[in-house]
Length: 201
Image (cartoon, rainbow, N blue to C red; front, side):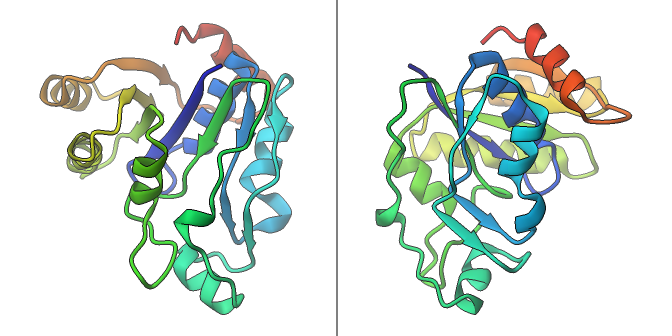
């Protein structure tokens, strides 16, 4: 069974939609270890709504404030320690979604998602979206994963295509493009199911 981490180059790059698409393709279980804020419309709720063949697991931490986990945890009087995370045991493929980018902190000691992913040593899919600065953010994300010897399955580009940006990212990183998820007028279950059919991981 495959266990895959999905991370983004930053916030609002389409990571949850990509996670839903990949999880649907693999008929996987989906796990978001930390949800920070928006608990009534969390990423887990969104993935459940957008998919048909995905089992959504309960988050390890549900934090009330829409802030970085380190501050939201402080406000909620919760202590997050990366040693307290255990990968769920499931009888399916497993998709694990991070939050924001690799350097998002869990606590004021400076433990970040990158540390957790290094501890797990699971293959990672990087979600990139084109905007001014995204080349830098994408290459930094890939380089820091390589520095920690974390395996990278490839890149999935989300949103509008920018061939010039994609070409330089792929050439510089030597990482494969796994898919391009187009801009959608409405992200709904039909869109996710259609995109899942096009994947070949």
